[in-house]
Length: 496
Ligand code: FRU
Image (cartoon, rainbow, N blue to C red):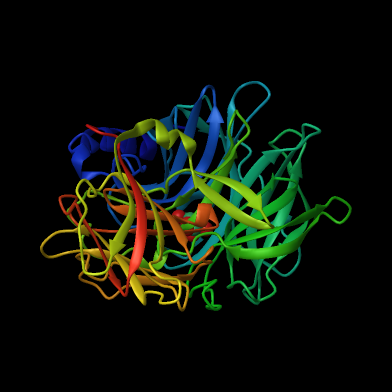
């Protein structure tokens, strides 16, 4: 079968993407070659390099008929776009090639598993979601003739064939394969299904791995399941969350559950849960094990509820991936650190100790939109704590964004209301953080169109995109009451 849609998409992206200036993109965060990008897919290390596939609509900066875009990297920070690998054109995926994962087969080929979506009754009809395979060499992939390999007949009773998606595969110690897939009961509550396979091609239902007890939203999307520091960890991105204190916010969210997989019952037994990211733009993360044994995660640096924030119209791309983050478990919690390779790209260092902050001030050499800052903030006098500390960034005469901290509430807030957005989407989010000996410790990574804040050595992370023109490079500090700050700043990727 000739894949006309794939051939056409490859010709289109090659021609049109060459017109996009590098200066319109972030420096070290992955963006689509052209058009729209959502979830990371098939994140893998294969034949000596990292591969990232992604949900992709090359023809527009809005979500539509899903393709799989493709990029490769040696360090997870410099990415090269490759031709897209999957286009919707088979009867079982004519409405889209939705999210999925990748794995190397014993014969050296790479196996992709994705959700094929077809519609019954036209564009507004119902989705039918099935799991499909494609096999390739890191550049070209052929859809498997036996597709779909899992369909409605492989679902336990009471589960909907309309929401059955996002397979994440892995290889077990005995050489067989498993995958976890998102699904939902007829009453809308999400479940995660575990399937097994001897060869990666023929799959069978094993168990309901985990079930949404009504607490974490409705449908559960984009699961990931992996061992970490002696525990088993389950990631899921629920739709339609209700807020819970400062832990979970409304809408699409992300949940990390830490616990244990019971081989007998093939069920996951959770012991702890938390949000994965406490900012505004984070969804559908996927992890890999690097060749040197690190568990690294990349998420979609966006949220479905903020996609229409205007400002991007002039850019021919939409959607970014987060910085790759190294994961660990400390004191029963998920910790995240920026991938250590980032420190290889540090440029000029500027350091200040014991800076007194009250009236608004700038510091020589502290500015920029592609920088890393390590900041420790404490009251000047522990008996008279400051009321509010503010860091303004991505600032020019008209626009700015803010990070503020109120020690008496212990709330850290990101606010991008004045960043240039013309729409009333979510622009603020607050996160309840711990103060250690009266101090908070922030590790801030700015790329041209985003901020990622690693709080207290990665105990929590807040992520947000910003639209502000990259020329707005100003940073300033202010405090209501007297605060003291230590700050170390590095420029990143100088000259790139
Ligand atoms: C999550 C998601 C997935 C689906 C994909 C479609 O963001 O809704 O569940 O596979 O996006 O693009």
